[in-house]
Figure 1 (spheres, rainbow, N blue to C red):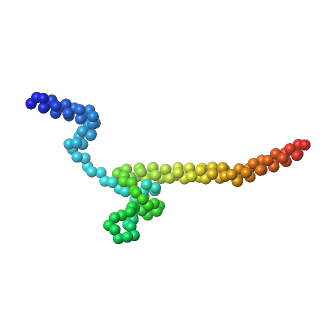
Figure 2 (figure 1 turned 90 degrees about the vertical axis):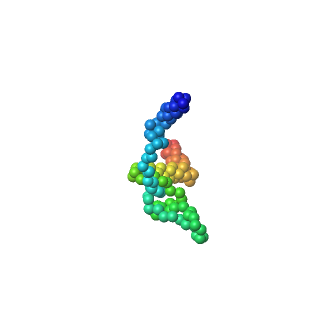
Figure 3 (figure 1 turned 180 degrees about the vertical axis):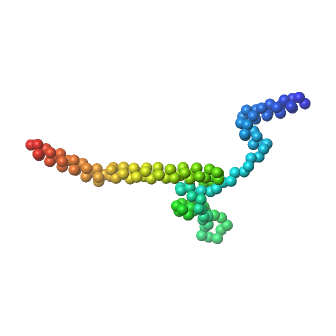
Length: 134
């Protein structure tokens, strides 16, 4: 009988060591269930509609964001963290726009035609300078 008690105590101690106190308590005491809200991964909007197939079938294809017209899978976020997610997405959107502008500028500067025109202009200026000096 004593061996069974020692095994139970050792199991509880190992569970406390492996799990933290909150994890250990969550085994015995149920926490309040969290509510989740679906949001668009592109704009963080919650104005969503379900997309059904054109044929008559009892299933849905996905969801569509009415704000940015994104179609596909949506992310589920805890209700109390939705504002943080929207703020991060707004900041991320500004960052992505600035990266796209830099990429478009780089694509313009590395365009072979622009490089050819630049080399031609530099060569003409060099020829004019050499003809002026001699």
